[in-house]
Image (tube, rainbow, N blue to C red; front, side, top):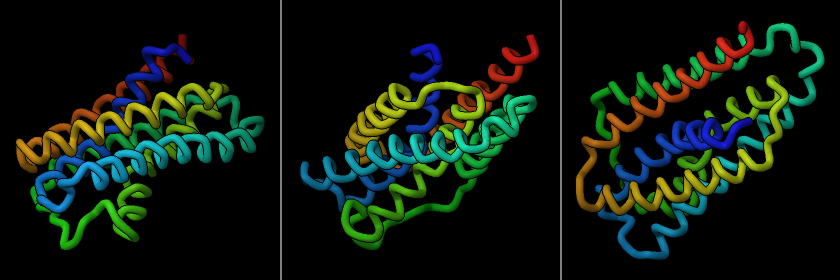
Length: 185
């Protein structure tokens, strides 16, 4: 997989973590450096590990679906992208009652923001792409976007996060379209 494509996938996947980080930053509950580092690390780690887990799951079924794998990859990316767009359009506000960088809340947020990475890892296995470098890039980009989101959240507020989630969804759908077009050519 080309590095530029991997980077765009990583950016698309990082949008959930970025949006949640903005929300966490606006809550005023994640102010100290340790809390910010803990949250960013978890988001990056979970993104990378869920990508690998999805790839491992996909590798076991690849030989059975190789004739229509590009459509499966497209459907998964379309589903994830559409959900991100739908979530970005919703007007409901999310607020945290306690510091979201600790305990069960941190794990829940880490899993929730990395479910789409599982689907991307599965898609990568179905199209025969190696996972190791992409997983590393996905994790590092998620970590960086989380740090940036926490910083922005402290300054800009919650409104910006929804628009970024929409952009992430559009990027993933675009990647899915590219996969289908590439396989049809």
